[in-house]
Image 1 (cartoon, rainbow, N blue to C red):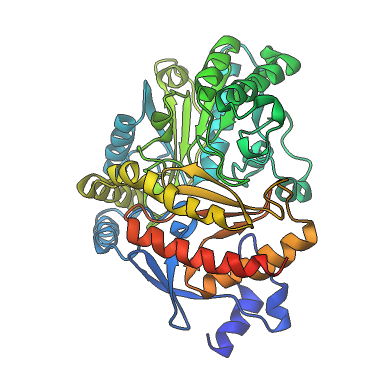
Image 2: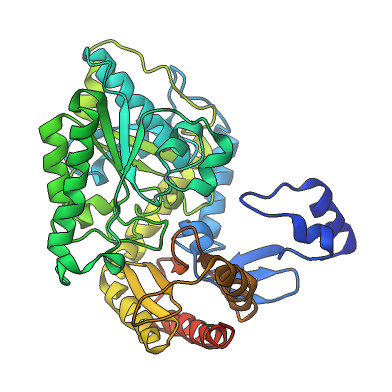
Amino acid sequence: MTTEQQSAMRDHLWMHMANHQHLFEGGETPIITHGEGHYIYDDKGRKIFDGLAGLFVVQVGHGREELAQAAYDQSKKLAFMPLWSYAHEPAIELAERLAGYAPGDLNHVFFTSGGGDSVESAFKLAKNYFKIQGKGEKHKVISRAVAYHGTPHGALAVTSLPGLRNQFAPLVPGAHKVPNTNFYRVDDRFNGDEKAFGQWAADRIAEQIEFEGPDSVAAVFLEPVQNSGGCFPPPPGYFERVREICDEYDVLLVSDETICAFGRIGSMFACNDFGYVPDIITCAKGITSGYAPLGAMIASDRLFEPFGKGGETFYHGYTFGGHPVACAVAMKNLDIFEREGLNENVLTNGPAFRATLEKLKDLPIVGDVRGEGFFYGIELVKDKETKESFSDEESERILKGYVSNALFDEGLYCRADDRGDPVIQLSPPLTVGQAEFDEMEGILRKVLTNAWEKI
């Protein structure tokens, strides 16, 4: 990185979710210059394994020329047209394809610019739908502790992370929180019984609905595998019970699959992996493998009916939602999925990924390895016997001060996160196999062994 680039970054580039102080103290931020396959490269010429698929995004890997070609071809034909009372071929074709992948009667696709916009759209649809039904009191939403659902003001209210929410208060009212499915941190009353814990966690949703009043609750927002906190999978029977609860109280179930869709867990939509049919799916990220920005809200026939034959208008939209170039890229991206069997690769090799990461449990700093498919979290602890976590000072010094940078320096880009308990998250491209699993495990082992010596 040149001196000029350092100055330009410091003086003009406002990075996302980033503390810029180090740039004013002579520090540097890595500049990624290009990507190829499973790897990214920085301006110093280092080759780094992309263990996070960018940000849970680049499912098919970097440098796919056919995706660039699809964008080029569509740009020449129709570079832009909004979906505001008009349509274009790429959006029609992609909507039909997504409806085919979705379960049940989720047949109606509302395109957005990304995952947070998709959650925002689902929040607004839930309130709008019940208002049309003469149930305008149903405006509250429920989500889980430590969950992240995006940064738009409504989506941020659904989000459960105080560090991301507090500086923007007051938020949209009516968003309430229930326990998540972190089985590693449950108390002794469940005696290792995941199904009993899952039933308990699901019943807390019913309890919250009863407490708020069923006539006031519109929707429950849940990720199939919760991201923040470090990849919490659903216990057996959890979503079956949640579906029953939502049906009983006339509450919409929103499956937020911004991360989990498009093969991250295995199927195109992770609700299929866990055997439930939501009322709405929100998605983004892997829909284009990051080669163009795009998101979607997919709604059931019942929810669309008032806006179809019923003649109502959903007064909501985005200039770039369903952008023709992004839709064309998404179609080609999904062609790659089907041609190369990427969903099958995850379903087949997911257990091997888990087994490889679980080797790290012999290290004293590794408390838990959890997740599904190609989406895993490794929780770091100070004491394996008691599950004691790091103090704030230790987390800052070890996780942020050492582990994150050391992993990158050793050639692995992933996420070291302490928005809940300290975790390392891995979400590689869906094209990887055992050789890449071993590569990640080797780097993690070296860095975490050194990290333990710093406690």
